[in-house]
Image 1 (cartoon, helix red, strand yellow):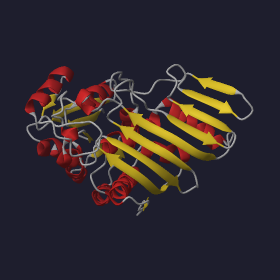
Image 2 (cartoon, rainbow, N blue to C red; image 1 turned 90 degrees about the vertical axis):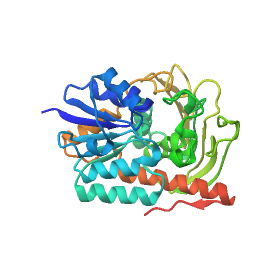
Image 3 (cartoon, rainbow, N blue to C red; image 1 turned 90 degrees about the horizontal axis):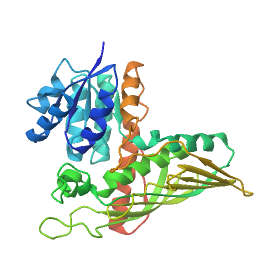
Length: 347
């Protein structure tokens, strides 16, 4: 029997990733969708041949639905995901998991009590060059990662979101919460945990508004840039930057400086991974591009979610992973506010 899916939130992330990735599978049926903006719901229903649910509550309570994709705005994740779990649905929740670590912990407790799978859509773990880079690190051929730098920047969500203007909810403090930190820096936080198999210890960071403006010309209320120095439990240090003001090609690169060489990931447009070994040998890998706002491809996140449900779990990117990312983001904002290095609180 096919897995029956409901999608809450009908913005760009559902249009270009969730809907297409579910519908390419023969073992899945997308039953219905909902968005607080009825026009968006109807657009997705027409594009993908699904029904429009009359309300979010009716969709997540529908006994004919097995699992939910929560593609709602950031501030709604804890509401939608929690309600869906309470009504016996597996949930694929978009990042950031929630707007506070406390809410993340409550969501995880709800998933545990319900006995349902909760997965967070940190798709960078599944990008081919990142998977290969992790395998190389685990092999030990380059030794320990000593330091690193990672960045994610593009021209801003107003060019990607459904609104296609600076009226986007991404610029709203109440809806977005973290600005660029919750939108794209969170991806790199999770990626570092994945690649290094390690946890953040502390951060020194600055978040700021460099350029983005509201329709009235005032600076937006959330940061459009983030610059940080981070320390990992295993002893490596590095920089993590994120920006909505890279007004040119998207940058989604990571460089790992190891004892026996350097790995450069998603920096060269032709070779997604380059390994430069100590002594001069360079190995180039052409193993698949990473998704960009302007060039979509299968992220693998829906496949991983569906397959985890079929095998009875666990989620490959868990609610605990989502929580760890938010703990780092909270430390970043505290550091920016106080001007001090701030410890990342694990629980």
